[in-house]
Amino acid sequence: MRVLIVKDYEEVSREAALRIAEIIRSKPDAVLGLATGSTPIGCYRELIRMHKMEGLSFSKVSTFNLDEYVGLAPDHPQSYHYYMFQNLFNHVDIKVENIHIPNGVAEDLDEECLNYEESIKRAGGIDLQLLGIGRNGHIGFNEPGSSFESRTRVVKLSEQTRMDNARFFKSLDEVPTHAITMGIATIMEAKRIILLASGEAKAEAISKAIKGPKTVMVPASALQDHEDCLFIVDRKAASLL
Image (spheres, rainbow, N blue to C red):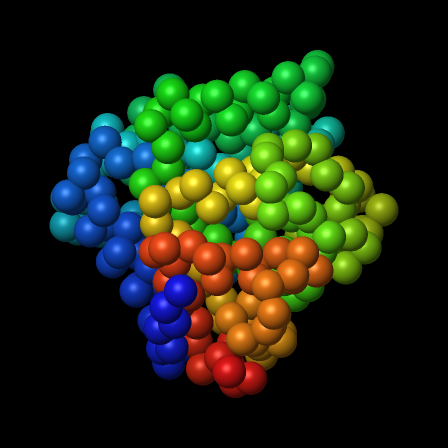
């Protein structure tokens, strides 16, 4: 595990985008694992700029998203399907058939999870996985207590996570209670991992993930064992290191 501390959110976003672009340029058919939430938006904005201004092509790239809310259809404004198309896919030349996001309204959610794992394997695995981190140390929607051996599955969201995400909904009552998420073992199989964090609110989680003991109560601490994991954090997020 390596840590890159930069000045601010804009630099976090730029450094992440540069590394993703490097992967795509060296391997045009790269398989990317993508994250949602507020943190990756700047990175996606920079990738869009690189596509439009520097010719960065996503035409052969395949993507797998970390998670999706259970019960939200792809056209729901707060679904992660909607988020990804609004913040990245609608603005680059990626092929729709190469986009993979868990289906939160699948009739059989367990089968959806198994099929998602198989799709990742058929694609040859994930070359680079982008992650954020929750204030409680979650990655994807792997909440504290999640097994390090976990695979893609349906999980119950903690009240902390639901409250953190309530700002995207009209009220806390509208925030889904469950989600489909890649498991920690699924995430750890990515060849490279980049985790992004910005702001003082993430400082404790970053400190525990990097300096603390490896424990299921801090899911991101599993990343200590990954062979090629880079944390890109701004000074505020790194303030407790």
